[in-house]
Image (cartoon, rainbow, N blue to C red; front, top):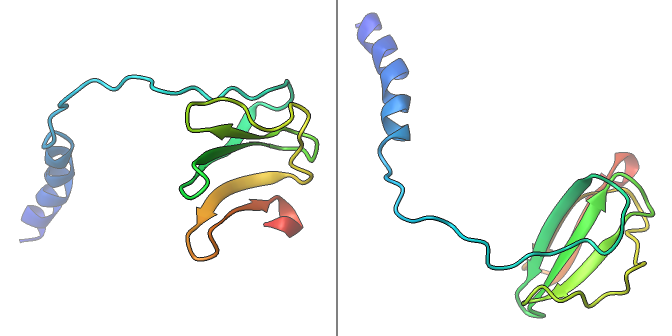
Length: 108
């Protein structure tokens, strides 16, 4: 019985990987370009469904970019807008209907 269980644990996950056929090829429909240099780690992109805007932040420094885009990818915020703290995550909170962030260390 133990050998059958071990066999199932090994074989079953590999069957799951092949169970969903690839139906169509994905294509790029929008590109959000960070407006200035600085940083190599994008923290996140968050969609605000009420405002119909994308918010994108670079992680790693308080002076890195925080950018706001419309639903077509057009930059709406000033090119020099900064995060003002070391962002590590960005999301839309449906309860408060706001974009929220967390940061490094004490801001986590």
